[in-house]
Structures are given as structure tokens and as C-alpha cells.
Length: 132
Image (cartoon, rainbow, N blue to C red; front, side):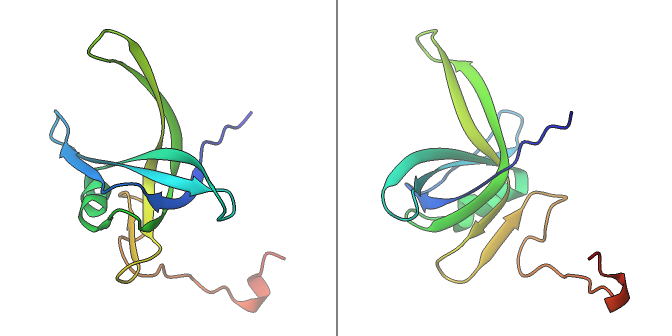
């Protein structure tokens, strides 16, 4: 049986992203998106985490209240807080982030994904090769 773990989410940034460098020296950026139920009321706050070049781009361009599309996979992890209590976190590990408002379109993708900015090129098929 095949498994699929993919999420696509659109929301507004609740605050400016937190950009830092991990202990291993890898750039990481975290931010929270407020998601709504068809534009009416806020239904949740989703934490998004980006790594490496995507993290650098998110930290540089994303700002509070901007509308953002984040695509990635859902992950659940745990850690121990300072009091020794186990805490659980559910977050989106982003591999693509696109700013939907602001000073022009900015699209960022993790290495191996889509282009970092601009539009993707789509190869046209000859009419006889259409799959339908």
C-alpha cells in the first residue's frame, strides 16, 4: 500500500519569521500561519519550518501579515522542555513557499524542487501525443 504525506496551505503570517542557524550550521526558519475557513474566521495556527536555502529566502522576504502559500509534508516531533516534560509539535516541513501578496511574486523551493524565482517552464506536447 502506498503512502502520501503532502500538505498545501495558505495563510497569513502571524509574526515575522524566526531565522537562525542550527547547531550543525544549517539555516532554519520558523513561522506561523493563521488559516481561515473560506476567508471568514481564523480556524488555526500552523507552524511551518524551512531549512537551508529556502530558510534563508523565507527569513529575508517574508513579513508579518503577508499572505503565503506553503507546500511540504506534515511532521510530528517531540522534545523535552526545561522542566523535563515531553512536548509534541506538529508542523509543516516546507519544500516550497510562495508569497501571494506584497512587492511582487516571490517563490522559493527547496533544492531539487521548482525554480527559486519566476515562472516554471512547461514543455508543450505535440497534439497527437495528448494523454486523453
